[in-house]
Length: 398
Image (cartoon, rainbow, N blue to C red):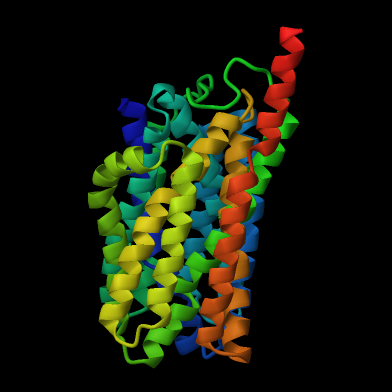
C-alpha cells in the first residue's frame, strides 16, 4: 500500500477511536443520565444523523471542488469546536446543539477520506476501501473498549477523551494530508460497462437503488447502538459488557478481514453477490439477538452481525467509486456516506417508536422484513446499466 493510504488509515483509526468513546453510549446517556425517553433519544440521534447527511453531501461536493485536504480540515475544525463545547456543557438542551454540529462536521470528513483512499491506490480496487474499513473498526474496538471503562468511572471524561483524539486527528491531517492529491478513476475490471460508454445518469440511478437497500441495512444495524443497547441494560447486562460487544465487533473485523477476503473471493464472484450474502447473514444475526436473554446470546449475535457487515460495508463504496464519472468521486462517496447516515438517522427514531408502542419482538420482525427488501433492491440495482450497455453495444456494432 502507498504511504498516502497509510496516512489515511491512521487518521481514520484515530478519528473513529475518538468518536467510539461516545456513540455506543449515546442512547444510554440520554436515557439514563439525562432522563429522557427512548423516543426522545431517537430524535436527538436523528438530528445528529440528519446534520451528518447534509455534511456528507456537502463534503463530497466540496472534495470535487477544492480537494480532500481543505475539506477534511474544515470538517475537523467544526467537529472539534463542538467537542470542546460538549466537554464543558453536556446537559440538556445544549447536548442537542453540539450533537448536530458534530454530525455535520464528521459528515464533511468521511466522503473525502473514502474518495482519497480510492484515488491514491487506484490499482488496489476494493483493497483500498477494505483498508479504510478495517481502520474504522480498529477505532471502534479501541474506542468502545476504553469508553466502557471510562464511562463506569465518569461520563464527563468520555467527552474529554473524544476531544483529545480529534486534536490528534487534526495534527495528522495538517501535516500528513496536504500532499495527497486525487488521481484518475480506474474502473473495476469486472464492471459490466467495460469498453462501453454508459450515461452517468444511469449510473447515478443504479447507485441510488443500491443505496436504498444500504440504508435499510443501516436502519437495522443501528439498533445495536440504540434500542438493543437500552434493552441490554434492562436485562442487567452491564455497561462494560455492552461496550465489550463493540470491542468484539472491531477486533473481529481487524483480525478477520484478511482471512475473510479469501473466503469472499471464493463465495462471491461479484460485489453484488457479496452484498446479498452479507444481508442474509444480517437476518441470521437478528434472529439470534431476538431470542437472546443473556450476554452470551448477544455475543453470538454480534459475531454473526460482524461477519455480515464485513461482506456489505466495504463493497458499497467500492461500487460507488467504480460507477463515479471522473471528477465526481467525492459526490458519489457523499451519497454512500449520507445513505449510511440516513439509516442511522431513521433507525433510532423508528426503533424507539416501535419498542415504545409495541415490543422488542415486534422490532425484530420489522427489521427482518427490511433486510428482505434490501436484498431485492440489491438484485435489481444494475439492470439499467446492463440495459444501457447492451443498447450502446448494439449501436456501435451497427
